[in-house]
Image (cartoon, rainbow, N blue to C red; front, side):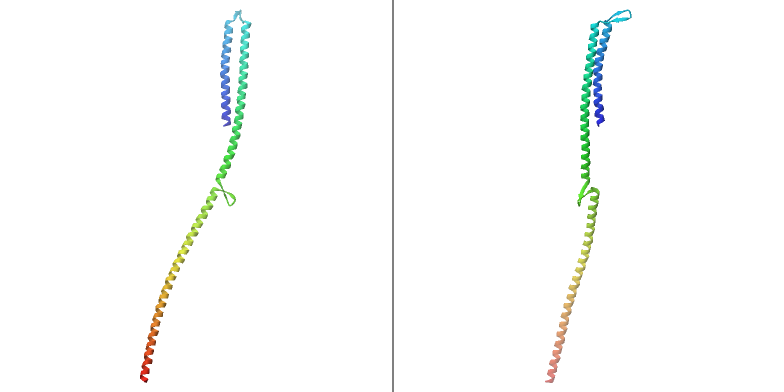
Length: 194
């Protein structure tokens, strides 16, 4: 990211410098051509007026000054953009660190006072849930079996009590019958004796 911004800034700066140099050089080239064309020829030499040469020198000096000012401005822009890039880079590093911390916080859960990874926590919780479910099922079946045994025992108790009660009634009836018979025999014996 830093390199892209740096190279794009550098490219733009040099493009503007090249464009301004092309404009200056084309005007300087045209000035040289005008100077050569307007100068007089003497044998194989060209005679140039000193005023025109001074004007050309002044224009070249102005162009050099303008180019230096442009270079200074470009260097200022480059250093400003470099400081911005460094600032952005430090912000990116800070954000990366915060992102890592946030991801660690999201990926970990505090369980019994210890940071635990979510997958470990989920495995433990599901293990506990399945263990409790199995334990609940075992206890349910034990309760159901115990309940059915208790029901059977109550039914047997009720039937035994019923049988006992009926046995008691029959034995009471037999006893009463035997007493009556005994009483009848006693009464018969008395009557005979009398």
